[in-house]
Length: 150
View 1 (spheres, rainbow, N blue to C red):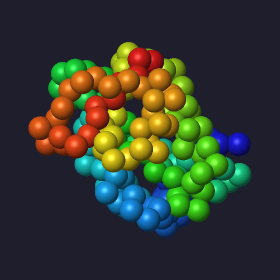
View 2: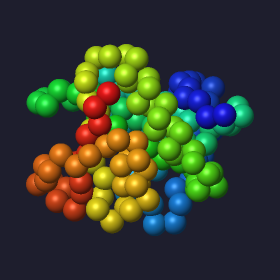
View 3: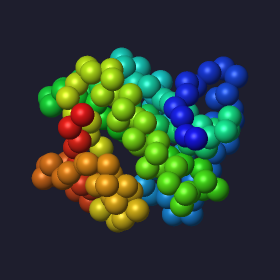
């Protein structure tokens, strides 16, 4: 069973040892990058959650709140350890993130930026109900900006 947990003094090193799959560094930050983003965006109420299965950390998710229009949540990172991929862990983790944000209820939407070349991630987000906003970020013209209504 997949669950979301908190990053703590006791588990952050375990989280830092997670590994990206081959070629994934073009699409998602490594674990230390995700932990650093959580710190850097602390003024935007950033949260980094562990993705856990049977007491083991198998991934990380990082969400922040937009500090400019349009106001909402931004799912900045969702990574699953390379050894755990292909079993539906990412889809289950995404469902838990959306459930947690829905329950929190601060904002009605969550956005994510996904590189056009990252077909597997695009399929996971689309299956979860994300749709293309049509917006093209000048700083990331090779990416889709997707939104999901909570």
